[in-house]
Every structure is written in C-alpha cells, then in structure tokens.
Image (cartoon, rainbow, N blue to C red; front, side, top):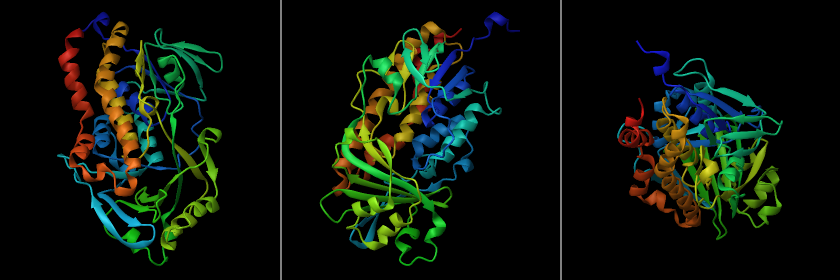
Length: 416
C-alpha cells in the first residue's frame, strides 16, 4: 500500500491566457494531476467572431485530450476551390493528403465552439485530474521567469512551480522571458473578418459556385496585380458563413489599432473591382466587421527562461495562410503536458522546458516563416497547395507520440 510520502506531489502551474493555447495546456496538465490556475485578463464575455481550420494534427491532440467531436460542429474540408475575382469557373484544389492514416481529415469550425470544448475539458468537473481554476479579469503586468513569480495589476504577487505564457501576440510573458519588448512586425497586409447567418443565402441567384461541389473553402483572388483575396467557408455545422478578406494595407500600420471595427462600405470599396457575385458576401456581412493587421513575430532567440515558457502565438505568431495557427498552439500545449508529468520535481522544470524548446521551436519557426512565404506567393498559388511533402510534414505530425517517445528516452528513469 502506497504511503503518503510515496505519492507524487502535483506542481502548482500558472497558465497566463485562456485562449485556445492556454486552455489546451490546462487540459493536458490537468490530466497529469497538477494544480492549474488560468489567469485571463478579459472577462470572456464576448463571442470570438471568427472561424478556424482544425487539421488532422490538431484533431490528433484533441483526441488525446478526450474531446467530443460533435461539440465542434465542424464542416468537412477537402481543399479549396479557386476563382478569379472577375468571375468564371472555379478550379478545385483538393488537399494532396485529404486524410491521415487514421482517417482524420480537416474541419472548418467556429473558434468559439472549439474554445468552448477546451474550456469544458479544462474546468469541468468531469475528466481526468483536478479541474483547472479559471480567474477572469486578472491582468498580469510582469513576471520573474526564474523564480516563477507573477505580478498582477491589482497588486497581488503569486508564485508557481511553472509559468506558461499563452497570452498571445501581445504577450507580457514574452517580454519577461526575453528581457526586452518584441512586438509582432507589420506585414503590409490586413484582413477584414466577419460572419453571417447562412440563411441569408437562401433564394439568392448564382450561388451554386459556393454551395455546390467540394466541401471546403472558396478562394477568390484579385483580377488586378494588387493583392486582394476573399476566403469564404461555412462553419458551425453549415449555419454560419465565415468571410475573410485579405488585402494590401498601405497605411502606416504602427499608427493604427492592430484590430478595429470597419464598415461594410469600407470593405466594399477595397474590393470594388470584384465581380458582383462575390460582393454579395460582403454586403451580407453582420456587424461587427473587424479589420485585423496581419503581423508576425520575428524568430525569437529563446522560448524559455528558468521555469517559464512561451507557447502558441506568444512564441511564434504568424499569418493564417497555412491554417496552422490553432494546430501549432495545440501541439505546443500537448507537448508541455507530456513532458511535465506527475512526479516532476520543481528543480527539474528547467530541463523539461529545454526539452520542450528542442522539440517545438524549429517546427513553430517553420510554420512562421512558411506562412509569410505563402502570402508572398499568393498570386501564383503558394507552395503548400502544391507540395505533398509539406502537407505530410504539417498534418501528418504526431505531437503526442513524438513527445512521449522523447520523454521515455530521456526522462522516464528520473521518476521514482
């Protein structure tokens, strides 16, 4: 019979940020039996009005976490049909790897549905390990990455065995890990994003190009040299239409908000050269329409410092052109969960984080660089759409199996 002294002690872990990455990290570490506290600066009282692509590598992580697939309300995606903005017939471009070896494909999901499922897995009473505790309205203003202390805006100072910076592109934890401020840099492009109810398409003429044929996205590129692209697809079991409108942004982006509301008239003016059949999707847009600057982090010298690590967009925020933003965040978080197993001692945290960086940094940086390259190649169809090797590298990756194998080879003997 096990004595009290022989029972592995859980670690106290702070996760800064309750987005997709932070919640995934909380689920993965909860499964190990650790005590997880999630600190989120917002009140999480608004829907996240955007959709997201969930590819096979991300689905593999969700399966490991014990998710319920139906809760994502995903729409199958087998590729993209491409159109010229001047009109004409579309050209289907199927994924070269439509499914992985276990039959996993790709889904188009509302980000709120994915977020809600991860939140359920993180803080719900059901599930392996003690539920994580979610603290809303708790803004972190600084971090000592070596001692594992956080300072909050309300004056509180808290100490943990491990701190995970899952606080996105504007990360505060990144500044503490690096020792200097590193902002994401402008790409010279922005995107309008919005959703509308799919019932608005009912009865409209000339909609077959969108509603019929291959399940997946519809890409409409500018008939002119100046880059503009509409990317349209259904989500939430087909009840909502997601509209993404990428365009060159000639403004001095540092003098404008990174994301701000825009009017339908602004969007229509930017895309006025497109055929009327495509402009319908902009005219149907529901408020708020958001104009997001497309920014990317430069390659960081490190993701770790002491007992603190950066995950997701805090480490490698980039453009959405590979549809792997959510996938990389989920993979990062799952890797941390596999490396910080129950029985890990506080003094072992730095070595585990070095392993995390060794396993994850080059892959995250590859997606960062290639996403930027895809944007540059957009007018001639980027390499990802034409490269079976790249698709296999991204969606065929097993973050869980790879990390568990590394753990077994390097750390399993350290647990008693």
